[in-house]
Length: 232
Image (cartoon, rainbow, N blue to C red; front, top):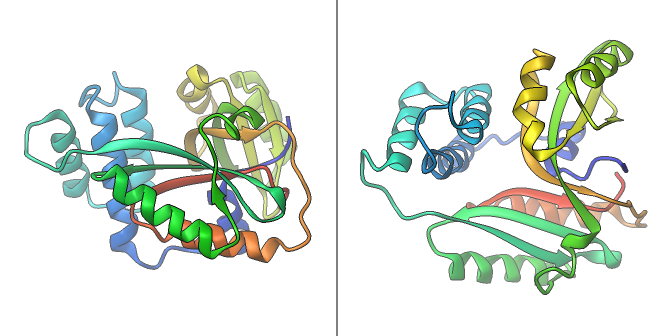
C-alpha cells in the first residue's frame, strides 16, 4: 500500500488549523446528520460514532451534536442533505477524489468546478479516477513510539501502516473493520474516516500548486474530505 493521500493529514503536517470554528462545526454537523439517518444510537451505528468522535475532538458543544443527530433522525426539522463523491484531475496529471455533503448538489458541483478551473484542474468522468484508489478505513494517530504502536495496530487487525512526519502514523483497515480496529487500538486518534487511499503515488514538481487547490476546496462549505495520489 502506498502512503497517505488524505488532505487532513497533509494539513496536520503543515501545521494548518481551521481557525474558522463555525465553518468546521458546520461540516461536522452535516456529517453527524447524514450518519444519523441510519439510526441515532452511536453504539449501533458505527458511522455515527465516528462522526461524533470527530466532533468531540474538535470541541464541538454537546448541544450542537445532539441537534445534528436529531436532524438526522427526523426528530427536528432540518435541510435535506445528500452526500457526493466527485472525481477530478489536478495539476501535473494528479488524481483527486472529493467527498462532501450538501443541500444542493448542482450548486456544489458548479462551485467545485469553478475552484478546479481556477487551479489548473478539471472535473473527471465518474469512474475515471476512482479505480486508482482503494476504499479503506483510515485511522491517523500521533505517537512517540511508532514501533510499539505499529505492533499494536497489527494486533488490532490493521491491513497496513504508513509512517508520517511529526510522530504521525496512518493505519489502514478494511472498510468494515474501521471501528473494530479503532476500538482495539484504544488510542486517541487525530482522525478516523472511511476514505480513499491511492494504489500508487506520483511525484509532482510543484506541490504548492496542489496544496493551494486543496486549500481552496477545503474552504468550500460542502467539501468534507479530499484525497489524492500525490506523494507529499
